[in-house]
Each structure stands twice: as structure tokens, then as C-alpha cells.
Length: 157
Image 1 (cartoon, rainbow, N blue to C red):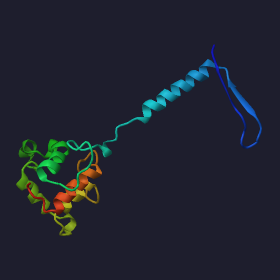
Image 2: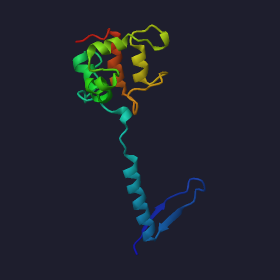
Image 3: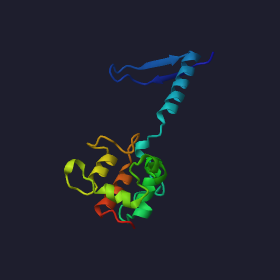
Image 4: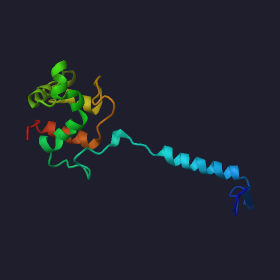
């Protein structure tokens, strides 16, 4: 049997010197398993804060273009359900077809008359019944990039 020992110099509440000795090997092993478990289960991947593909070193909110900034976000997050191949069979919203995308952006949320507001509410997951993407939320960089592109009139550049 092996053990371990440590002591505290003073107890702050009583101002007395105390000592704590643990002689049980099971206690030390239990502490080790606890610390390893804590380390393993404290690490997780949170999809809400993922870095957008193609922009691994930061968010460029100045030079936003459809081809280099917005379309990669759509490809990585939307095309699995909203590509031409998928929507041709279901007659759904085709984001790969730029004309279809522009038509959808003319639909306003609850009649507010703001260009792209229905699409914006869906991707920001605010107030709209169908959140997009349905299983996670785009990060702030992706949302800001799409917002800037829509505010610029959603040009095909």
C-alpha cells in the first residue's frame, strides 16, 4: 500500500496549524481517476463557435464578396439541403442557383419590408419558426459576413 501526505500551515478560520494525511492508495487512485475523467469530459467541440472554412485566421468583414466570402459559408452549411441536386426533386429553396437565392431575399419577415429579413431571421435563429441551419447556429463571423452582403444588396461578385 502506498500513500501520500500533505499539510496546510494554517486553517484560516481557526488560525490553528493543521495537517492532513491520506495513507490510502485507493484514495490516491480515486483522485487520479477523477482528475483524468475531469480532463477528458471537460473538452468538447461546440459547433456554435466553429471557424468558417476558408477563413481560419479571423473574420474579414471589410472585403465581403459573394464568391469568396458568402458562397463558401453556404456550401459548408446550407447546400446539404439547399443545393440544386437536392431541391430539384423536392421543389425546395435552391441556394446554389443565384437567381433563386435573390428571389428568396425579396421575401420580408412578417411584412416588415426589409430586404432579406426572412432569410436573416432564419439564419440568426430569431423569431422565425424554421431556424437555419436546423441543428446548430452559424458563428458571429459567418452571420456578420452574410449580413454585410445582404445590406450591400446581395451582389453576385
